[in-house]
Image 1 (tube, rainbow, N blue to C red):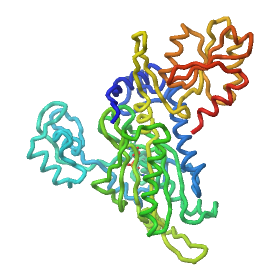
Image 2: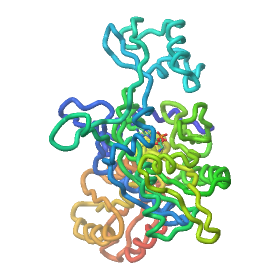
Image 3: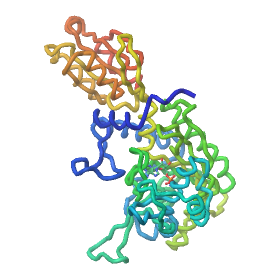
Image 4: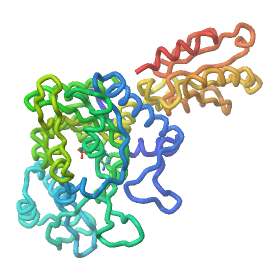
Length: 459
Ligand code: GAP
């Protein structure tokens, strides 16, 4: 396995903050736990990640269609999906210092990962904590409230009165927006089962655990794809989506030794089988995405709670049935963290200096090239080149500081190409193109720049 020790969460957080990738949320007010704001460079990278995913799973995918459903849904949706009753974490409060903790996390930390709390009941977790006298990690005391289930959905109120009849929820997953639109999409696209519905959008969870930067946040984006298929074909499609999810990561430039499948020990209330792809994050192996065989649970429950049929009629056989669903779900922010971790590198240069460089896949990089005049008096020509290139893709322009420093700045945000305008450019309309990874330079006519770069940045 390739050595990933070079990257730490601290280094990533610092780089992201100093280079306009990600800032702490509400920073001038002292921040707000588990929230982060994307800066000018970060928003481009994240948009590119989302674009790459959409291209792969909608644009290039047979029979897959996109939706953008409302975040606020009829509260009955969450009763039907099971979230109102059971979307919760086992939580304990320290009676001494009043800090709140997840029982499963306490057990995992106490046993140094040797005990897997995912397969434990609440009673077993309670017994473990009592028997092993698991102390509060904040104040060191052993004085807990009993474990209680803490629902992760954020509530708000609709309308003018703040009573329970007006309670609505910020969606904790985007998936339900795809399920409730199953027949709308099927009817309007005339799709035949099997077909897919994809969505990218915000989801919200009242996470009380430390977030580890953007790994776990209370507001995040999910990219979810539901594949509706006939019972009996679900097992094959489940395997198929495992492959597709893996291929996507590989094509984004992930080293396969940093990825692994992990079957779920404890299945969610809706799942027949489920697995994650884990990535070797700076915090260790952790879930990057999930693939779930959700059976016909969701459509059946929506049929039951809405009173509307969610059945599909096969146009050839006239058979009526409720499709099974294979779900592929990945957090855009969590993928962003994986992409950042994977790209981060420190290279020792011949002159003894260290170069920090982000080896992003070019399709993901915020700027596809940076235009740099060698000297300020070449800025007119440089701006001419910059203005023509940025009609096609995102470009950076920088004329401040030595050329070496400017290369370093672009390396740190992962810009794959630097275009240098020098005095020869004025003579013969050629420029120097520097490759981020090899640092090699070639000479190219300005007229060939756009096509050259466009060919390299494709996903
Ligand atoms: N619809 C299924 C579902 O939501 P999940 O495993 O709870 O399944 C899917 O979430 C993905 O969403 C995860 O694999 C992860 O990438 C991302 N995710 C979940 N909770 C998150 C959080 N609090 N912060 C950031 N990403 C999160």
